[in-house]
Image 1 (tube, one colour):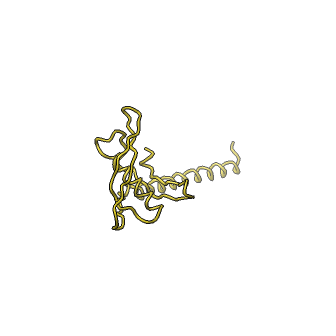
Image 2 (image 1 turned 90 degrees about the vertical axis):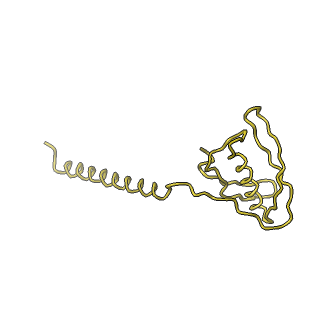
Image 3 (image 1 turned 120 degrees about the vertical axis):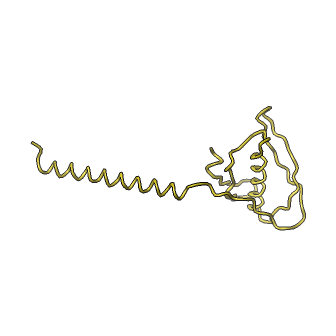
Amino acid sequence: MISRKLQFMIAALVLAILALGFNLIHLRRKAESVGAGPVAQGLIPPPSGPTQQMTLYLASDEDDSLRSISVPSALPMDAGERGRFALQNLIAHYRRPDSPHPLGSGADVQEVYLLDPASAVVNLNAEFAD
């Protein structure tokens, strides 16, 4: 015969498991509704000003090489925004159907943080990693 103390412990554990299961289902539904889809973040047009030639290096999967292209663009004055804009232009070239190194459609740069003139931290979204 099972003692009364053990019966209460088993009942408490079963109730705890059920409560955690309902909480898990609630959190999963909440996460699905919050992250229902990626928010398309368009290119922010830079401030008007003189255009400069920006050199982008595109990777090619066919011959494992890099090729450079020059793109005329007016760049923002802030160095972090300038880096983010340059990376967004690079990703836009990789999103094209004829790209030699295709990326997913949701890939985007969220932020660029400059630590010093020689190093930066780039925050990319999850679609970029996929």
